[in-house]
Length: 348
Ligand SMILES: Cc1ncc(C[n+]2csc(CCOP(=O)(O)OP(=O)(O)O)c2C)c(N)n1
Ligand SMILES: [Mg+2]
Image (tube, protein in one colour):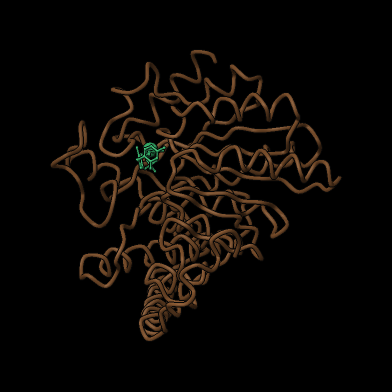
C-alpha cells in the first residue's frame, strides 16, 4: 500500500468528486449500449421492488443496491456461465447481470413457485446455477469461503473457470474473509474477491469501524494483486475486473477488486435512513446521486455522438413495459404447494 493508493481512496470517498461523464474513448459501442441497458434494467427492477415492499406486496425485507449497478455489470462483462459466482444480502444486481430476467426475480421475491429459487428463498437466497450464480445468503461473509472452495474445485478439475465472491466493507470485518484470502493465496485459487466498499455496514460509517477506509490493505497483507477503482464508473470496473480475471484464468491465483460506491437507499427497503445513519446526511446522498453510474455513462455516450436522448427515451419506455409486464405476471403466479415446505432443504 503506498501513498498514492490512499490518496486515491480519499479522492473516491469524497462525494463531491467524480460527477462528470466517464471516460469511454476506445470502448466498443455495442458494449457500452449493453452496459447502459443492463444498469437501467437493474435500477428499474430494484425501484419496482422498493414500491412493492412499501405497498405491502413483498413479505420479507429487500436490500437494494440502487446506485451500485456499475459493479455487477462491469464485473459480469468478463464472466461466462461456467464461472461460479457468489453474492450476499444485496445481490439482485449480481444475479440480473448474469441472467437479465426480471420476471423470475420478481417471482422469487414474491415467494412464487416460478422464482429463481422456486419461491423458497426470497430476496436474500437467490440461486441460478445455469447462469453460474451459485447463490446468495444473508449471513454476512457467508459465501466468501464457498467461493474459494468453488475456485479450488475449478482448478482441480483443470478448467480455466474462476469463482467470484461479492461482499461489502462490513463483511471484510469477519474473520472468515481473512482466512479465505490467506487460503486462496496459498492454494493459488482462481477467485476474484470483489469488495463493494459503500462506506456503510447497516447504519454505521466505515470511519467508526476501521482504522483505514481502504479495504485493499488486506489484499496487500496476503500478497494478492489488487485494483482499486471508482465503482460508479462501469468502464473502470470492467477494465479492472477483466485484468484480474485474466490473471486468475491464466493460473496465477486470486485477485482483489475494491470498488468505492454508495447506496442511494438506506440499509434495507425503500427508506433513505438519514434518521439512523451516522454520517449519512441528505447532502451526502444528493452528492452521491450526482455520481450516478447510469447518467455518467449516458452523458458520455451522448457527448461522443453514439447515443441520443431519443434512443434513451425509447429504451426507458421499453424497460418500463418489460418490467411492468414481468411484475404483473409474477403477481399472478402461484405460491409453492404447502407440501413443498420440507422439500429443497438440502438441495434445490
Ligand atoms: C454474520 C452476520 N452478522 C450481522 C448481520 C446483520 N447484517 C446484515 S447486513 C449487515 C451489514 C453488512 O455490510 P456490508 O458487508 O458492508 O454490506 P452492505 O450492506 O453495505 O451492502 C449486517 C451487519 C448478518 N446478517 N450476518
Ligand atoms: Mg457496506
